[in-house]
Image (tube, rainbow, N blue to C red; front, top):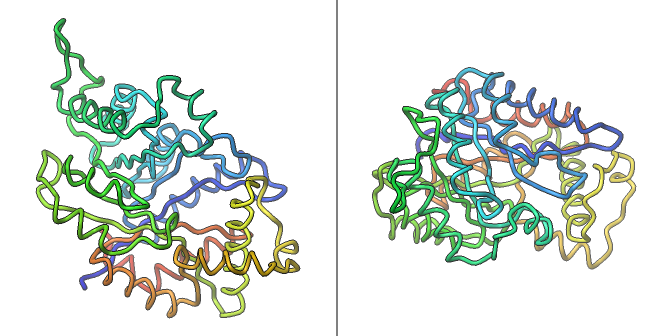
Length: 337
């Protein structure tokens, strides 16, 4: 395989005893670090009704991130399209492209990124159906191509940017792979959400892909949680922290980030250990050499040349070092565009 590109997905996690502003400032600093280290792109997520994650408005945060960096691609991972008006999404991202031409990614998903009640409040017309999602995607393409209109005339998504964002469809179960192929958009397989995602998702996408005004050929990316430690002992503790967080999520607990002592002294129940096995496909962890081997194999298995990683740790210092170790392992600076 040719040189593997690696990007970062940041969720602006609020750590224990840290304020929300601190979480956002950490995201900004991490974007700067990602560019310095040679990562390919930096995406931020959309979550609502959670005190654990501060990232609720990626399109707003992206303005600061792009302004704080110079060349790295900045994107959403993703905009949960049913929560929004397709016209407003088009306008937001054309504004971003006007400000930062050629650097903006629009990753989109159909999951709410929250509970259904909150999603309904975000967009009261949301009926959570696939036909509505497909209609929104179709409208979005017309807004980006300036072909939208009614019997009363054209409807333009302004500002009329010279370029438009590169669009990606997020898929965890595989159902959206055909949607990405149908619209001729990029595909991101969210293995960090569904550890059982298989290479068949990418194969289905490529088999059904129809060239579009954005992509002549299919382009797929894989995303996964990744933890990298200086030593095996450190990597094991970082992995336990990630495992603990996922268990808490499954219990419906989205509170502040647990402190290190809570995680270190926690003993998983037998039932929780079974859930850890179930979640194991969502996470890669280990030392620098271990992670490089696992990540390279994963890319080979899925036939992709780019992976987006998401890293949650007990401290910013360990998270920063994890990104540095991955960059060293893959010599990212050497191959950065």
